[in-house]
Amino acid sequence: MCDGDIAASAGSHGNGPAEPSSEHPRTVSRRVALGGGLAAAVTAGGAGIFGGSAFASPAPHSASTPRPGLSTRPSAKSTKDVELITLGTIAGPAVYPDRTGISSALYVHGKTYVIDCGLGSVRQFVQAGLAPESLAAIFITHLHADHIADYYNFLLMNVGPWMKAGKRGDTAPSRLQVYGPGPAGGLPAPWSGGAAPTVGNGNPTPGIADLTTRCLEAYAYSANDFMRSLSFPDPRGLMKANEIALPDVGASFKNTAPAMRPFPVMEDEYVKVSAILVPHYDVFPSFAFRFDIEGGKSVVFSGDTRKSDNVAHLATGCDILVHEAALAGKGSDNIPNPDYWRLSHTFPPEVGDVATAAGARSVVLSHLNAGVPDHVWKEGVAKNYRGPITVAADLQRFSLT
Image 1 (cartoon, rainbow, N blue to C red):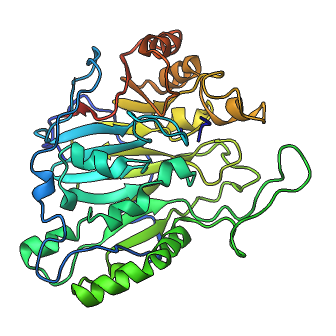
Image 2: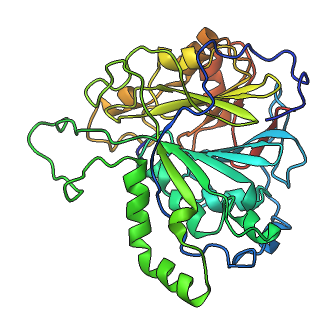
């Protein structure tokens, strides 16, 4: 957080990187909770309050001029089999009238995987022309508010695989899978010494499962009313919050990102997802994710992190490294903790170091300070990296087909 943060046809991507050596079992996340729901889900025999019509003709939106080195285009209804879409690219938690909070989507042969859910990301999902029922899974890098502001809104606004039920006449809706951090297990001492207030009623460091349950409870009246007045299904059966189990590497809220190997998170018919811990000040757990796509392509999302060898390890040989970047003095002047910026985020030349160490084929910069010209970001990264660099715009698309 900042102040002021697959199947392409087999063989069609023959130049893609080798898959990570590790150990990718078919199901690898510890599933901990049935989190809840949806205040306005699908009707018993219909397609929900959207009915699909709101997604037919997304309004036009112009992304910034495409940069060389990657196939990019402005937002439109997807015609590609495999695409990365940067739904929102601004760092938070500040609000900007023409920018969307951090969120990305991977569209793979009719399935959409969302990575982080910053403010406005549900609207951007619609604007990108992605069908609500295409949402297969959500991945949360860490639990700062600017990465989860719209998380529960995906459920409230009828964006999820359960929408297939009404269209097919199924009686049992599909469940949305969510993968994210478990509880931190403790809080650090305040940087300035002394004591700090604590929120949480005995649970001050909830993971994604408890967070989801609390959201369900907060919207209980709406859910209960719709189940009675419109025969909506029980929202507790519409999704599942999976807290990512960590390997035994000595990680804790006091040792947030020790050197480690990437570890598997989930696998389906289109993608293998692996993760690694990253150092984002004192946030724990905080993840970077790698998506290895059937056919050979790969995309890595750094999450919020300072310069990290773990990210370079995870990103080895990837086709696209989506990396955060920050500039001190751009939104940081009012931060009371003078060490926060350098211990939380990666400066552009450092992004270049990470990309070069990883052998990444291209870099896409996202989670950026507002008001910085594109050339400043690119010139900084290019000091230490010679590959293609794109400063992502909201709703920019990158073909991996």
